[in-house]
Length: 93
Image (cartoon, rainbow, N blue to C red; front, side, top):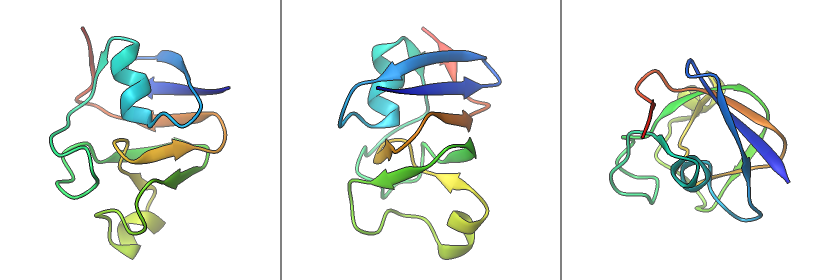
């Protein structure tokens, strides 16, 4: 199982197989900004600090430049390794 760490909260949780980063965060009581949950609204966009992800959708709502800059959409991102994201708007619930 992979692990998700949300900074700057410094909170981490395990990510069940086939769960998105957003789903794992919510299950662990970490509230991330969100709306559509299908990769189009970009409300959950944050920075991937470390790790690697793949997406549930063929082309999530990120430009090539945003992807290259390390942006990620947790609502449709599935971890391929342990992941650290920088999500300043995240909070514990």
